[in-house]
Amino acid sequence: MGAVDDLEQARTAFGRGDWVTAFDTWSAADPDALSTGELDRFATAAELLGRHDDAVGALQRAFVRLEEQGDLRLAVRCAFRLAMTTATHGEPALSAGWASRAVGLVEQVGEDVPERGWVAFLRMFRALGMGAYAEAAACADEATAAGRRHKDADLLTLGMCSQGRLALYAGRVAEGLALLDEAMVRVIAGEASPVIAGHVYCTAIEGVQEISDFARMAEWTSALERWCEAQPGLLTFTGQCAVHRGQLMKLRGEWGSALDELEHASRRYLEVGAPDAVGLAACEAGDVLRLRGEWDLADAAYQRAADHGFDPQPGLALLWVARGQGKAAAAAVDRLLGEPSGPVQRCRRLPGAVEVLVANADLERARGATLELASLATMFGSASLEAMAAQASGLVELASGDAAGALPYLRKAEQLWARAGSPYGRARVRMLGGRALALLGDAESARRELEAARAVFRQLGATPDADEASRLLAPADLPAGLSPREVEVLRLVATGRSNSQIAADLVLSEKTVARHLSNIFSKLDVGSRTAATAYAFEHGLV
Image (spheres, rainbow, N blue to C red):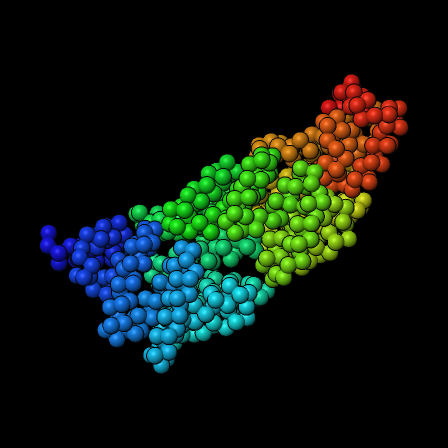
């Protein structure tokens, strides 16, 4: 086969999405024999296969040739792609340099051309890096308008997706979701080029995941999965696909599979030279490991997330609470809630923050955080976010001693978690409901709720929660006039836990635990924890 036939084979393979054949054929050809269009397509195939250096090399060669030929518009597009791919690869200085080249060239064009829209994207990303969201939104508007005016499908689709994300950050939920919906329709219909399609898939899915819109997330992740599977050899974007699958598996209680997917995602990110993205996958894995009671592994996962530039809070603070490090957890949450952030970021932070505040008996601040979370849940209209808000409200009422006031919130949360398909979320609120029922004297209803919750925890492998449910399932006839709460405390004393650890486990203050312990000693007529432990074992309380 001659060189001309080889190039035709590469073009044909590229046209049908066979990136491996296209890449291999172009790689074997003399670079000087490739047209600028072929260099552009060669770079696309290389980028999709995770061959970063090859993609950059082809784009650089194309850029030099285009600039020499005076084709400044295509040179701007080439510089844009170089700025984007180097940024994704963790090369900010190179990315800034190519962005500067694109800006300089588009000014030389001096007319209304679609390339000005691509340069607007570069300004948008720069503004986002500085936290200037209003400026970023203006840039996204400019890019979208250029795409619509010039009928540039890629520019329009990416622009609408960017507008959607920024509208969500600004709290304009209906507008943001409508824009993301339209961008996704365009991508699924095949209107965007492969690289732009991949970026839109991942950007849109990440956007709805951040506001816990798991229905859209599941639908779009399935579409992304089909898109990836239809392209043999595709590597780029498969890491993001695995992360989103793992997040959905976590929600659905498929924790072992979730950990496998998240580890797969980390490997894919490293293969394509995007180590910064490992942080999110590591943090998600840390959350699953924490819920399973594998605390050392969870701590290591959270550290890995931090090492890759991803803040592991509030998951790490919840781990500290579980380990009896309440003060460290409270300090982390103080910092987290004090940082400037928009509504989307607050959605991620507040549910865990409420748990930490309650564990530290800071009920006034916990109530304030709960009210804010409820307001955000109403704004975003997400069933899962509404479940988190109702659960947080029930937890605060329960910790405040209002068991009757907690129950309506907990019942609402259970219904919402069931609708969202989260067995763990539903079991958690059933356990809280069991505690409330016990405090109200409805022992049989409490027992049924706690046993149901414990069965789910055991099925999921949520060992700490299963153990807590077992502790709450105290015998009906309690010895020595002990209350159910005092039996809970005594059981934990018998396992060797300190007052601070008991406080964290039962979501009480240390002062309250000390008062319970004093009552226990008095009722049992003992003077030490050792004697109380012996009594617990002798009477089958442990």
